[in-house]
Amino acid sequence: MSVRILKPSSIFDEEILLSRLKDLNVNFKAHKKLLRYIIQKNEVDIKKIPELPIKLLNLLQEEFTICSSKLLEVQESKDGSTSKLLIELQDGKKIESVIMRYGHVELDCFPQEELERNRDSEGRLNFKSRKRATLCVSSQVGCAMACTFCATGTMGLVANLTAGEIIEQLYHASKIENIRGIVFMGMGEPLDNYKEVLNAVSSMTDTSRFGLAPARISISTVGVVPRIISLKRDLPEIGLALSLHAPNQTLRQKIVPTTKAWPIEKILKACDEFIYNQNYNLKTSKRKRHVLIEYVLIHDVNDSVAVAEELGKLLAGKDVLLNVIPYNVTAVPYDYKPPTTLAQRNFVEVTRSFGVKTLLRQTMGSDINSACGQLVIEANNKGGCSDNIGDLEDIFANKKAAVSKSKEKQFSIKKNKVKSSVSGIKGDNSNTEKISHLFNFKDYIKSVLLMMIVLLFTLLSFRIYLKLKNNYSITTVYNKDEM
Ligand code: SF4
Image (cartoon, rainbow, N blue to C red; front, side):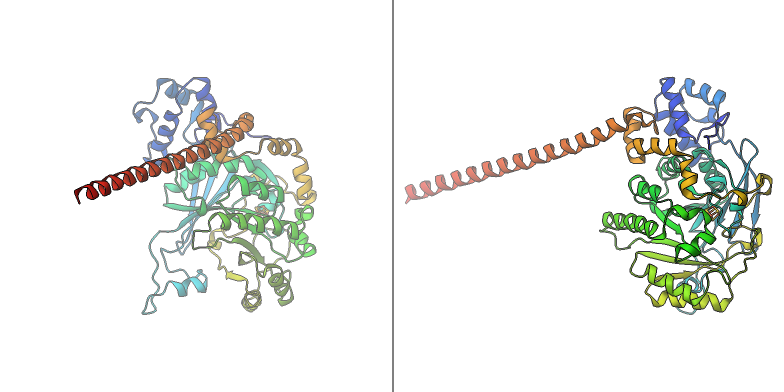
């Protein structure tokens, strides 16, 4: 699917803005300042931002807009835990994002474990107010993955969002709530829109912009193995969630039909490597990180004790947190039903008996159709994808050119940061090779400097030692003479 071109562009599409600034020979510091004022100081009038270069002001007025999308509607769930945002993109397409609040009201939808954890010594629920609002963002309009329990999957892939459009969801939500975390679990498969998602995360974590901790951002995938491997390099600190839904390939293909290309074992191996790398690098941290395994529990499909045992065996000993989500009834062409309470309880007990950390998630926001798998935009639904379900490999083969390019270029946010200061254009991959040399050279310089410091220190110590020794012998001689 071709990259959408917005006119005017969003100022949050950093790659485009920086490239235009380079054309006009404008200092990139102005770009940082611009975004800091817009995001952190809520400035909506660019003319009020002090000392912006006139060339930048003219450029912004002619070619850019602060927000290319419109917040059309906000629906609040009855218990106040959830707000669903309906956002209209520049070309009229619509997407949804969901604000989830864990902790400002007593929610009957909280997992029992969490309720117990939050009781004070007298047994009262003790939630802190609005400390943990998380935004569930969409990365695409519709989705090509066609998961059979998911309303978004019935839309097929309509469009990839630009990084700016992804960030604008956070921009809109930040006006409603103090967002502390992001989950890429809205519409779309984020690893199917890799480059834009990486660019968006880069902006979300930049301290001069949204300043979110990378560990508070999670990307969810059905298991695009090559991209999970790339993610280990590009966003090593990010949270990873895997939508598994079944413990074996046959059952999984019934629920996630596009997954034929990647056997479960390969997906779990990629996840293991990702989390091993994360925990290895965070070895000083006390809190071990986990891959979140999402498992939508569907009555008489994947909720039996036998399936739970198979899942328990599959995940035993792994650094995972199993999140069991009872199916939310939604508009899909299958006669799926939510599991019974007994089935939920039995399932969770069995997986826990294998030592797998398991959370039974209670539904949030189902009264406004914002619960897991319920996001769908009727207006965008142009026939769905159920007639034409390929598998992941086909989907990615269609993007062969793009994938092979990304293999060559190995898009990397870390490298881009350096790149910004070298070439000034974030996301311009033409300099990747130079950058990797730059990294090696930097390391080399560091080692040489370190060696010089050690040498200097040794010489100094030796000189001090000689001087002291000399003084001592003079004193001794002097003392002897005195005697
Ligand atoms: S569950 Fe996620 S990956 Fe699957 S169809 Fe829905 S949006 Fe796409």
